[in-house]
Every structure is written in C-alpha cells, then in structure tokens.
Image (cartoon, rainbow, N blue to C red; front, side, top):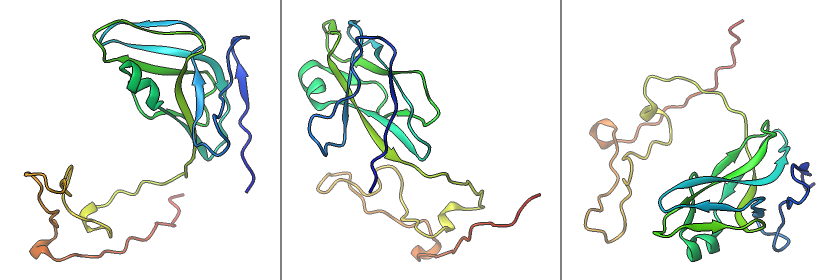
Length: 177
C-alpha cells in the first residue's frame, strides 16, 4: 500500500513540521509556534506555524495528547478538530485551561496530534422514516446502558409490536436532469 505524501509548509522559519514519535504510530505531533498564556477556564488558539495540503479523500483529525491533559489540565476545546482537504491556512489548536491557575504553552511544546483519516463522498437521501431503514437498533442516547449501572435499561425497538422491520433502500441512480 502506497503511503500518501502530505505537503507541509512552514509559515514561520522556526516552526516544526509534524513528527511521529515511532514508526507506525497513528498520530503526528503538532508543536506550538508561539508562547501562549491561557487563563483559568479560558480557551486560546495556539498556532503551529505550519499549513498542510491534505489530499482529496482524506481529512486531518487534530486530537489530544494524553500526557498534556494528564499533567496540565489543558484540554482541546473541540476534539477532534477537523482539517478538510481544501484547507490551506495555518493549523491552529484550540486549547482550554480547566485548571484554577494560569497555564503557559511554550514555543516548541507538543500540543496535539494530527491523524490522517480516509473519508468518502456521500449523498444524502431524504426518507419518510429513518427507523424503517435497515439497521435500526432502537433506543437513543445512552440506550444501551452501562452494565451494572442502576439506570441501565435494555434498548427497545421503536417498531410496532416490538418486531424488527427490514426495509431495503436502494440508491437512487436516476438523473434529475
């Protein structure tokens, strides 16, 4: 399998391009290109000083570094952050300080990881009832419960008489031209 090559541009001469700690690791470390002070319960964007050109069919997921969160109380404010294939500006990382003290990210600190993921183009098709589409498991948020938790309840089907209904939905290939 051929490995994709991702063009990366240093927007600051001293910026660090993403690095991989060990061959085979999923994430590539992103580095702060500037010193950033974050007050308690505040969020700041930390620039990495790099821009990337992710190829069509992929996107970049900016995810936390577990050590940063464990040791500092700093968390990524939106995780995963998404870098679309068409984005060509500086990669920035939104960091939130959950601690009661000011926190400082120093230039060169590893602040997040970038994971390259495949994605496919899709089409949306409006239907009358999504529960009638094959694969409905019933329930909702938390519907599968937490084993042993006092509020656990088995998932229930929304089908009449608790019978599973299977409806095959075929992709509409007709042209609307």
